[in-house]
Length: 110
Length: 113
Image (tube, rainbow over all chains, first blue to last red; front, top):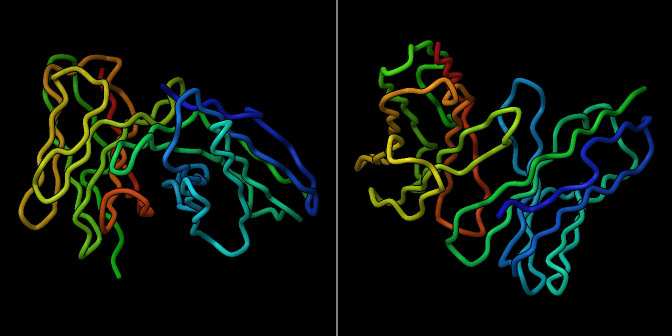
C-alpha cells in the first residue's frame, strides 16, 4: 500500500521553511526521500532506518517516528534550487521493494 | 564515474506491439530496480534484480517482464502493449539491496498509440 504524503503541494518564498510528511499504515523498516526536478531523474536525499540510523545529505534533515510509521522532511531556509517534487519511499522490511508516495510538489519563489 | 544509462530515451509504439528497454547500471552496482512513472499513479515499482535473480516484483500484469545479465545490465520487456502503458520507465541501480541509495537513470519515455 502506497504511503501518503502531505501536503500535495506547497509554495514558498526563498528563505522560508517547509515540512513534508510521509505516513504509512504499515510498520516500516526504512524511509527513503528523493527529489525530482521537472524533466530529470529522481535524486537521493536521505534514508532513515528503524532504530535511528540515517544517512544522506548534510543539509537535509528528516525524522522517522517508528511508532506512528511517519517520517518528515525538513527544508529550512529554502533556496530556489529546492523546487521540485519530493517523494518518500517506504520499505517494510530489509530487502523489500520501495513503495513510493504520490509526491509533494514544492515551488520556491524569489 | 558514469551514471545509469537507459536506452532508448524515447519510443513510440502501437497497441499490441512489444517493447524492450535497456538499463546499464553504475559500474559495481549489482542491484537494478525498474519503476513506471505516470502523472496519475506516481512512481510504481515494477521489479528488482540482484545478481541476475529477481528479488522483488510489483503488482503489474505478466506482460511486464525483466531480466538481468551477468554484467548487471538489465532489460525489461512489455508485450502486447496497451494505451495505459504509456509512461516514463525509470531504472535505478544501487550497490546492494536495502538501506542503500538508488541512482536513477534518465528514463525511457514510452508512448503507445
